[in-house]
Amino acid sequence: MPEKEMDFDRLKQRLRTTWMTGDFGKIAEYTAKGAAEFVSRIGIHSGGKVLDVACGTGNLAIPAARLGAQVTGIDIALNLLEQARQRAASEKLSAVFEEGDAEKLPYPSASFDVVMTMFGAMFAPRPNLVAAELLRVCRPGGTIAMANWTREGFVGKQFATTSRHVPPPPDLPPPVLWGDEATVKDRLSDGCSQIGLVRRMIEFDYPFPPAHVVEFFREYFGPTQAAFARLDANGQELLAADLEALWRENNQAGGNRTLIHAEYLEVMATKK
Image 1 (cartoon, rainbow, N blue to C red):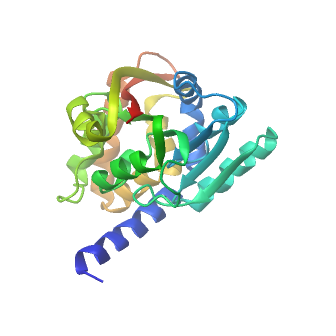
Image 2 (cartoon, rainbow, N blue to C red; image 1 turned 90 degrees about the horizontal axis):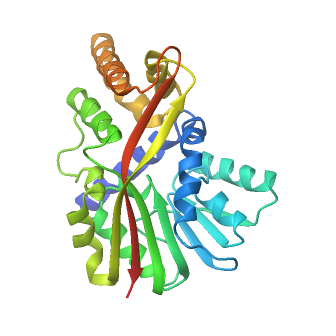
């Protein structure tokens, strides 16, 4: 196996470990409402075949299943898949959740009417492979729907803050490029007859102040845990202070509440 490919194998294993650390389900609870709103704009119909790529705990898959779609969710993190299964079972919804990689989807070409992903596939390290796979498994005339954090939005600023303390691998394209209109068009236009792009906001509303939000992410969000783990005690203190300042400066509430509106790029593309 070529060394470069072996490096990606190791990177994928680190990514899997990172996303399985903590409890992402706790984080996902605070974007579930916005995820359901995103699903409502896709145009999912009862009986339609829908794939949720990098599905996490099912924030897209669950509302799609409520609409009567035949839903499959796929993710690299086994613990998140189990949470998604439990959520579906608790509502007696029919949905299948399987282990798999956004860069190599284990489905035949043209298998799905809708291929969707929210704050998930954008983190796969090789976006050209992701784009090719999203297009491949979508049927002609079907919809590819993405929600991707923008560089300019709050989460993009959060990534930038963390990167100043813990630089990401230099050879990998930043995930927030999926939140850039020109980049999305470049990656998808060859396979799509039309691409609709709209910048939208999703609400983070936490019943605790910014300092506690930082601790909440340190406890439950794997990527935040991984970033802090790479720093010594002084570095961790500095990163925590910068993150708290960012949450505090953007907080639209007061007292013991943190309210943030975070920008993302909504992509609604029609497969040729």
